[in-house]
Image 1: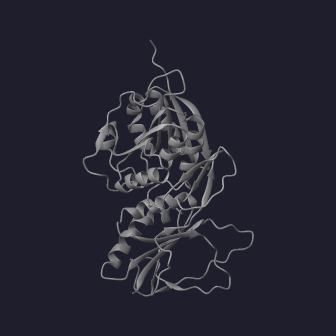
Image 2 (image 1 turned 90 degrees about the vertical axis):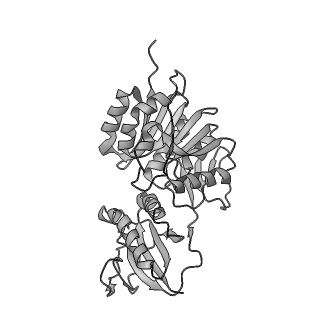
Length: 348
């Protein structure tokens, strides 16, 4: 059987975006993600079509030759395998359209296409990694064999899925650093836009009771799987839904949201909320965040925000300050930021 192989290289920052966009096609069961390896200078290039919508004649690309001192911008290589049948071109065009914005912004290479007679035996699996975040978190696959190096390490086992939240995106890393510092045992917390479930299992393993919400069915399934792999069903409740008017805002990445979502009405139910979503959603939900958090003088009333860059920081902060929040803590990696705010107690 012949296969259509679609391939591209990507940065760590863009990997989660690629995975989430691919999930929306519903036609990507066979995917392989490997660490990027620069081509050898002597390696001969193979004929590839630069995109599925290009002319039918193959375009031969010259191999990229790097000097020893030059560091590649790419961290991962992704290959997608589609049965080469009557639907292959239509599916490839959809994938190309979804991923082209990432290429235009320099986060991935252009999508290449080739027809191959066989596919790798380990397709449909992502490379297994051990990834350390903050002082204590270690992200690894469910089947990874790992010997803890410190007694206080917190292992986060994530199934290989297409949901956002591999632990490689700067927004995820920065948020986990803040979660490590501000989540306390016995807290009631909300993971809004749970994605892969990485925040939910991190907060639960720090002793919190967690409600995980997402309006994307792939994300809900991924969070449920993560809860199972980490044996946290007694601490994490996973639901389709959003907070307050979040149900009216649609899919946070422009995909297809679950229809008829149930909204959680804000009513001072949580000690902490963690939300890795777009800046415009943080701004729109500022009042809902305020109403959903308990106003206390202790460790509660904390909102951890991420999913935006320094370009949007002032807008997000202004909206949250207007809703009664004050800056508490901040992390930055390149242009990405994660910011913790505390809800100011009501004056009585």
